[in-house]
Image (tube, rainbow, N blue to C red; front, side):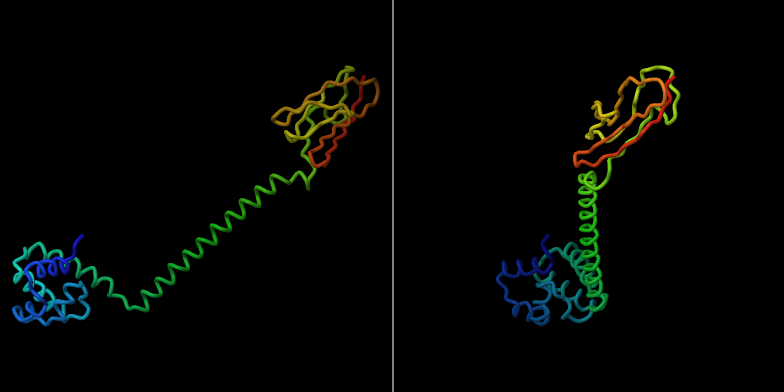
Length: 210
């Protein structure tokens, strides 16, 4: 969007006037006219004088006063708002914003590192820990009245399971089930789960077969 000063300069040059010509006609100093054209109102007198200068400049060039004065007031108010706070306070605000940005970068970086560490741990935890293994059936010291016993439980999906050294199928959820033959009297069933790193978990079930 074109600014008031740019519009005034454009019209002045179109009509073939120099700043000195306008200064003589309007009794406004050339440096003030230049400040208005550049939108730099800091070097001009009070706001009342500035508005009068701009109005006279607009009238002399024959431009629409109401429209351009409304545009000028908006520009002037914005510039005044930016300069209300002392420069040291503005600088402090910029420093605070920089600190916030740095803190956000550190927090984001820390979160990425944490996620990466969790991922590595989940991928390689099998190298440091024995696999999980639970046996649902039979329970310890169960009394069995049949020579066939169903051994069931769960472990990690990628681990291998044996029951009394016989391999057992493990499904995608880590569940397994195996029927074995036992003899009368006290019997021990050995269930083992071994992961890809050779870590093993073992559960013994002591049962009585009648």
